[in-house]
Structures are given as C-alpha cells and as structure tokens.
Image (cartoon, rainbow, N blue to C red; front, side, top):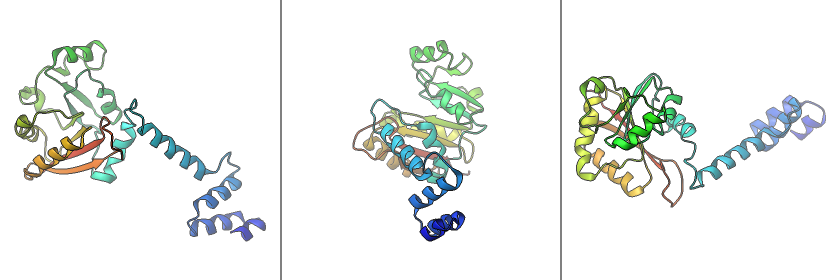
Length: 230
C-alpha cells in the first residue's frame, strides 16, 4: 500500500489497506484522498470511547435511544414505529418522549400512583386521556383494545403478582406484539427470565445485558417479550 501511495495511486493504496483489514492505514489514506480534517478511524474510535465513558457514569441513564435502536439485530426488537404503546408503571411520564422518538404513534401511561401520574399531566408529558390511573390488571377494555406494544422500565412487580401480570399482558398484546422490559438488578433479571421461561406458550423471551459492569445501573438489563401466535 505504501508503494501505491508513493507513486500517487491513492485509490489502489486504499484498496490494499482495506484488503489487509488495516483500518488505521485505510483511514489515513482516505483522509488524504478526501482531504478530511481527521482520520475517520480515529474519529470512530473516539466516539466509541465517549459512548463507553457515558455508560460508566452513575449519573447517566446511558443512551437508551441509541441502544434500543440497535436491539433489532441483537434480540429481534421490531421497534415502536406506528405502535400504540402502553408505558406500564409510567410514574411521571419520564419515558413518554423516548417512546415517541422511537416512532410510537400513541402512548398511554399506566400507573396506580395518583401523585406521580398527576406530575406527568402537569408537566405536559401526558394529557388526561392518556394518563390511566390503574394497574395493568384493571386496565379498562376500551384502552386495552388499542394497545399494540408495551414498555415496562425499571421493572418492580412483586413476585406473587408476576404470573397474573404477565397473563394480562399476554391477553392485551396482539400476536407478535412486543413488550420491552428493563431492570437494574441481575437477580431480578434472572428471576424474570426464569418465570417467563416456564410459560413458553405466552411469550418468546430474549435477554440482553446492555452494560458490562458489576454495578446496578438503571436499565442495565433488557428483556424482550414477543407474544407467540395463538
């Protein structure tokens, strides 16, 4: 590649570096060809380092948007494009905007905590028609029949209540409908996978560890539930 470069055949030099899978040299030559301000390989490396440093910060929720977009390849997440999403345990509606950025056509915030739900309405994250003050199990049929996908972030349903909760979720979601679940704790993540693994007729279950660390971070673990065909 250096010989091609010395005689001015930069395209051939770039091709030679790419065939040798030498990303650094390929980036350097590409920079020279296009008169780029910085080696593209170094730029990409810096971006990856920055992303990892953000993830290691306990003050950061990580880049949920970026990571969820990548889930299609990792665990088969179809996405929220055009979906009517039930944000179960919405609290103050903090993730409603995220679901809309991910393409949700509509979002219903479901939570039995009256005060937290009132905050979501006061802050304009939900209007009164989309703030549903109840549990999933008691969700009115007129709302339930609209739901095509669900999100349960920071999953905190008690163990005794989980079988009924997931039975209701399976009743609400359409065939192949998906629910995205997040949790911070490995123990809760493993219990969740174990419980759902006992009910294979309801859901296909996939798990994913977002961040390699011993610490518990919000949304460190992801569980994707896909309702099986009836």
